Length: 335
Image 1: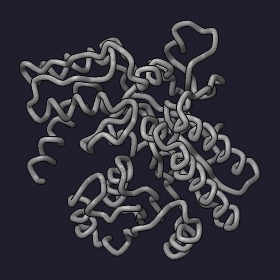
Image 2: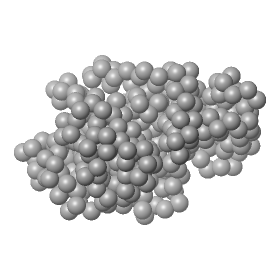
Image 3: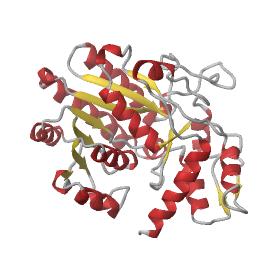
């Protein structure tokens, strides 16, 4: 694979770059930030040095289609991982920027693929559980086990709107034969990178507090809040496996992927078993992020991804927590 990772400095991008380089793929990267200022911090610059890839990191704006085209041609990329995004809470505060980053950058990439359609460039686009939203007239929202072809895509955030629009736009380009577009709908992603402005950040905030020995944390959610989560290692592996899947075996352009669905209280209890005295002060309500979380499915059905390209998660709740507590503490020790 000759990959170009756009948004390489973000929470997903830094782990994806690490995975791709470690797997022996040729990787070029672009982000608004230099490598040392990425979500991984100085560790990213050190990683690039280890693989001799420092000159393949470009400080660039993914909304600049001319710059992206130049990088695609320079590195003869056959796969573009399109990761630039403002997340749900951040996007609500700056909707104009959210639309430009999330949608205009994707449209530029798809137009680039159309202009080079003879090369059949793959575009891998992370969608999100935020593509879902409240179902009118359905008390309690979605039933457990929402399928990939669920028609109730009615997002309540602009971030979610851009994800639905991105899925549909990419599928249209694919239908016209202009781009090999593929997408996964991520649940909340948990990693050793600091929270990045999403509504599922409550879980990362709890993990970081526990890893740093804090015994009490105030969160913005109720104890009974339940949404799907996934370890970042599973998430980046899903992106790469979908990119490598034979096109003939895929029946759709957007796939749910799933792993675990603990309640916030169950996550707190698991952390308390590892950090004696750890407690969480739950919200009494009022934070708009709670409304977003309540509008999303509690459990996702990812059977098509498992059947069509062999997707499976590797991290259950206990393994995820043990791994991330160690990773956060290690990262803190090297700062």
